[in-house]
Image (cartoon, rainbow, N blue to C red):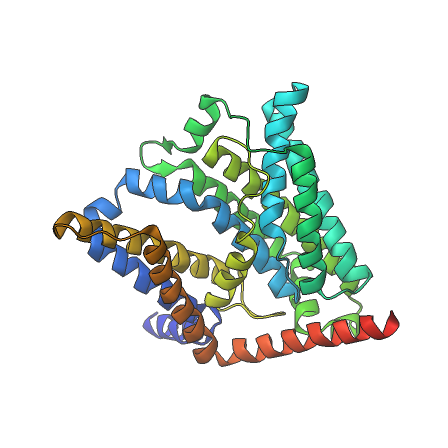
Length: 352
């Protein structure tokens, strides 16, 4: 029994997620020290933490699926805003019921993801270039649907999102858990195995009878499904609509995945992305409460949110550097992934 536990620990230390887990543990301990275990682990604190960060956590989980497949989507943030404006404007302008609007929002997310998948998998445009261009297309659609921030969500819906089941379980955490369970099932299917095979080496996967184009398309659609759920979470969080919000989530989710130990193609897991975004969220939380503590303790001490963001982003950058330096396997996967993107771009330029 003890020997099995030791072997499991050794295997975990060699896994892509270990560095991300270590950084997540560091950020967790930092929060406990700053706020105190009783306050930090209180039901109210956990509820706020999950409800305010569920969208970025879900987006990172979606991005993780694409990275495992050997691709990415930096337009995923503005796609969240698209779901948001759709689920706000449909009830407001057309009288559609809110649950139906949510379903349509997820379908819209699937449609945009299908476009991204077509550009990357079928037309073979490098995902960085394709999804960068798609960002501005989606942004234009968002503004056409909703030209200015507006709308509202009935209190019954957003208060439920912010509530605690049985007095201790955040509803937002259940949304994250639900997606994690779906991935746990998908990962064990033929499609889940194909994702890792195509991400590791598309040519070998094709030689083994796997269709890389179809697998990448399915990965984009699965990403779209998770993004749709994240967009609903965002709508419930802000209880209104904004066509130009959270564009930065694209790069943030990518950074979180890499911090967690994910590389380009067949390396890492969704858990790696969760550890990475957990580190990102907890560091921002710790910095905020640390400066609040200083302002309440030191007379006359004042600091702007700019400096808070600067310090938290600096710590996150150090975490990113630590991950890429210490994780040799991830570093090699990252190099190969970038090289593959460049080669695709050169090939596309020659064909054009």
